[in-house]
Image (cartoon, rainbow over all chains, first blue to last red; front, side, top):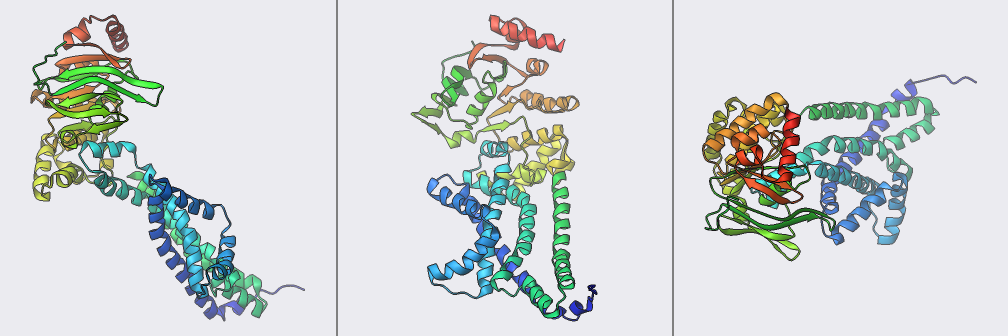
Length: 220
Length: 258
């Protein structure tokens, strides 16, 4: 039996897909808000001198870098309620799980940017009489934050794609709505192609923007 | 030696010891006394401790022994494993580095006024006015709003000198400031330093340019293996050295140039 493509089966049912996309965007934006702020704080800890601050921070980063995101999400959804006896809504759980993952990766982006500021600039700051705090605020952070933007955006768009993983724990995101629709219409090819195109339509422009930003920064 | 013990020295470096780790000793009991009118050029083989010496005087390095006095007052001394540096004294010294260390995220004017505003609490208007004057004097009047990436190496290095002068230093340190420049850009930077020398700015510098050393120095110090080997007027140290090691070095350097 030949499979007859019927794209109309999907285009007639775009409502749930857009609802799912909206959830996905909420997950992405909220996880990025967490990752951008907490990642910076974590980077300050991983670059700090006292071992009691540095070691736990580095352990956190390594834990998230060295385990699959899907395992992190499943663990978070099933184990956190059992261990800590807290029950949050699935979207909130998803945001926190994705946010923690992004925090670890963004911390690495910030750390690399901080360490990429040339040592000579700090020497010049000392020679100009700037205090350690003034050197960090006026020399290190402005350069580091600027340099970290492309990586933060790349990580951010990465979490947009990774967020599809929360569909398996029942968050009604774009991927979840796609699965539901594909099952209801028996149209997996059409449905998942459209779902993929929707992810692509958002990721691609951001990726191009990052490329443009990097080219522009490499000239300055 | 042009030393004198009358206490009016600008910088006194006594028995300076500096190493990196237990096995690498860079400065091994170095002594220099610099008078207020001196323009000291430090020459010597690489690895001999020249740049380290300047970095110590700038207060950028930990030392393991000895002391540095500035204007008769204690400035840097080794105290056990710690190095004690008087920050107020340090602020009277300016330094320019080999690689133009302009801050890339700030415009030329912002580079100039950052320290006067943050360190001395000068108003933005007053600092900008002084900055504009000094840029004008250095032939960079139209570059105030440019960013470092838009300048040539020679222009950047002149801005770096201007930035240091904004703080009215009593001593300027120049660490191989023309070494990273294309040959045709060296002269414009050396001219700025020669002008400063003409105005009586005390300076200590490391350079590989013997022509420049001869023209700018009132005193040349040959430094090798972490100690001062020879110290005297340029005619002596560059022209007719007394020490055999200086003679060897000078012959090698001038041989390459000829």
